[in-house]
Image (cartoon, rainbow, N blue to C red; front, side):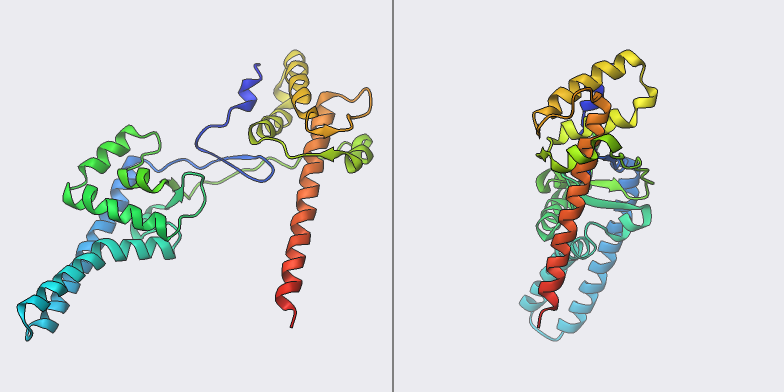
Length: 269
């Protein structure tokens, strides 16, 4: 088995602090169209209600005020409403909520007001002006089913209702615990850390030749980030497991210290 099978990180992989790849699949075109139809229907219902209410309120005034009221209704319905709801729900809309979808950034983080506003602004043109045809063809050609608004905002829509199964944490080899506690370990590059995690998780599935070859190459790459080297006679898999476990323990301790510091600062009178 070649090394690159463990080092490949696809564009749809989300990576946790322990370099565990989480694949949140993009929403399909069908689910996006269905959720979009719900949102469009609600948008036009809101527009109708606003127009009716504003026209009734301004019927006794001059024509210019009615035109301003109509323009305000359009802006609120097509721009303010979708921006506000996606900002407040961090990427959801009514349609997306019904189908278990959420808009996220390209790096899988939650969207902000800026992302929601750009998506809504471009959506006015591609969805309402051109009846959704640019959005459909853009999603059809995109591996993530991204419409033009997603490209402009740097977002895409994922399916939330996916059960994630994380592998169990790598255990520290007992005979390397003292060495790992005193070793200087720098952060591993994301791709290398992921490759190590995948290798350790698939050890039982590897034949002895591939296990030794891949483990040796990964250990050589990781050794550039570790000092001093492990004790003589340490196997590649034990060395890699010790590095991953030590990094996890140190990160957990650092996060605990930061949380304790925030707690003490916020509770100080």
